[in-house]
Length: 130
Image (cartoon, rainbow, N blue to C red):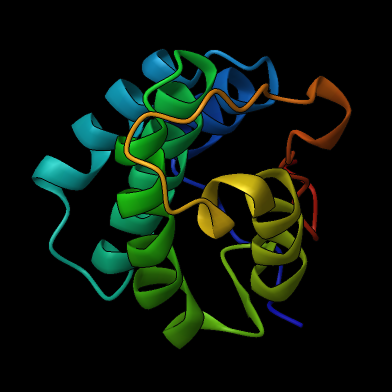
């Protein structure tokens, strides 16, 4: 386990918006962080941005957009497994995949797939922010 890190304030703000299901705002906050950031977590932040946008698309009925982003999120986040910046990568991807299972399985161009609010993934950091 990592020592208690001082998490980036924008990382935490994005998580707060994400957990409140404000996916558009969480993507904007993380994008602000990602744009200026040049360190080893750059692709990790990009994966979170894409996860938020996938959920935003799903919630708005853009299933094709959600499906496309769903695939790329794994590519960005899996290299950071098992844990990065307090996030259990496998746990998060598992919850993300469960939420988008019908989206990922669909082969239709414009399916109507309802979003199940009980399956929405959340982000909880370990260690928690100070």
